Length: 192
Image (cartoon, rainbow, N blue to C red):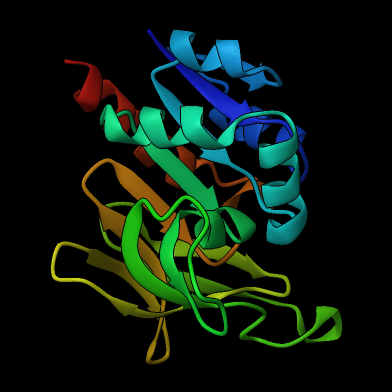
């Protein structure tokens, strides 16, 4: 049994909880810093990254989240969560948590009205993963230690660096839970 938290400051928290629910997983809605000590992995939901960062600072999560990452515990960021995890953000001097060696661009696929869905091959997850892109960021470049898991055309939309996993799209907005189960496996292996 692993305990996986979903950071519940803003964004699609309930949807991630639903995707993670399984007999081998206890899901924790994380609203307090103290809860980080009792979980084995953490999900950053999609939402609005600037708002999420403000709330992370307001509620004193920033340093504890950095410590969580440094301890090697797995993290999974979708859409805005990917932006929080990136070491570099185009047009900004610094990243937020900067736990993944990659540069990202906000809203790379356009505004809300340019939202779309498509099926993608995601290495280790599946050939036909339904991807929902809503004001989605893009991974512009990755470091040598980062594995590209999926592309949309020539654009990188999912990556992994050790125990850290991130994607531009919203797997939590579909009924396909394979991406989340992939993360659960990462958490299980990290706990061994």
